[in-house]
Amino acid sequence: MAAALFFGPPGRQLYGYHHVPRGAPTSAVLLCPPWGREYQYAHRTLSVLAGRLQARGVHVLRFDYSGTGDSWGDSTQGDFQSWVDDLEHAVQELRLASGLPLVDLVGLRLGGYLAARASGRIPNIRTLVLWDPVTHGGVWIEEMGAPEAFASGLVELGDLLVTEEFVEEVRSLRPEHMEEAHAHETICLITQEDHDYPDPPTLPGSRTDHLPQPAPWREDASIWSGKVPPDAVKRIVEWLT
Amino acid sequence: MADVKETVQTFGPSRRLVGILTRPAEPEPRTDGLAMVILNAGIIHRTGPNRLHVRLARSIATGGTPTFRIDLPGIGDSGTLGSGGSAVEEAMAGIGAALDELERLGVASRFLVFGLCSGADLSFMAATVDPRISGIVLIDPNRIFATWKSRLIQVVRPAMRPTVWFRAMTGRYGLLRRLSQRLRPESAADAVESAGDGPAPAAGPSEGEIHDQVQAALQAFMDRGVQILYIITRHYRSEYVYRRQFHDAFPDIDLGDQVEVEIMPTAHHTFTRASSRELLQATVTRWVEATWAPAGRDNAGSTS
Image 1: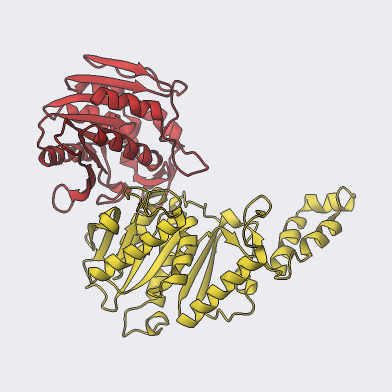
Image 2: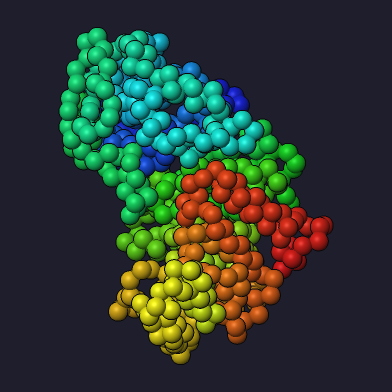
């Protein structure tokens, strides 16, 4: 069973898709997506991961940050603080829908960075999984391609229109920002050994797992989408169930 | 966003399909029962490539026409229908269910269907079987129909490059031989060419049969008053080479002003650049407003 819904504050509705398990629930997981085309390519992987967790008795909520996906706003209205706020709303929604106070967070790419920051503000986060998190904004911008000036002070970054302020915010993204992360357990899953990122952040009480896999956020040109990395999905399901 | 209201709709058998209904907040929704349904582009979920469909849906709805962005069965957040049919059959059932849902909600009773790539093919197919569909937007459908003129241009255009002239004059390749080969009719229908890189598949209907089927469908569309916006990007720059190629490929049908063709030579197939997305949004919005102005204004679509 599943429910597609809008939630969040009036005028800033966020899209969510709640995977409801059969029988007594075992736990609740919030999936925090990447941004831009990385999200477009990874959408299927997150859907598959949610389905596997649901089959193990887990309430799962997938959602879109404001200005992304089906949520309100457009790409010029996004910033990290708003998205951390959105993540908090999503945790509230998941707790209400599941009736479970403890929540796990799984963040992919920028979602990992945002989940780490949000976990420091949200009590009762059980497990925090940071999946190939974006940790250095400059490197991420290089991956997306150099920002190009558009009209009206806007900039095209990773095929989306954003503000110059947003580009500066991305550029200043550092692993130290994630040190406010707080959860009973924190696991960093690294599946891309060949990327240019420096070492993942060392968070208090965290461990890092390396598992080479296809990158779900990169495009497979034959399908305009990313490949689902089966072992990474399986590993995360094992951790959380 | 202040100009539109968006709601999540589940629909279809067991309500397994998901769509976002975008309705105008101001001005009042149109009263002539028209809405646009936006299909998936390939397997990209209903937001479209780089959120193309979201912005388009909000733009169209702001102008007064409700839009419904849907995930077809097995794509995005929609489950399969479990019909046991092919993916195309499931998709067609999904489109029909979306139209049923909008009718049930009292949102619309006649429809425009928008599709990019495989979505364009499905839009065309749906319009052949569902008389509620009054207009279709086809962007880069998977088959381009050639004409003698397009073949000539395909040969002459590259031949205008100085390097080609140099090679031709120095005898480094047989320009006239290539020209005669390209202009030779491939079939009695003399009009069909696969858009793919490889040869036509051995199985299935012949190119001529496909042309005849499409021609019959187009004739039925013209008789029903179906309006078509046909958009070609740079993806087909070597196959679709002049504006009226679509009209010329079907010389036995008077397509009149029911088919509007727009060539967007700088746009990528998935509209990666913001400028190309804005161009597409402006083009489709203008077409909807000009062709489908609500009753009381002069327009072609509302009288059909």
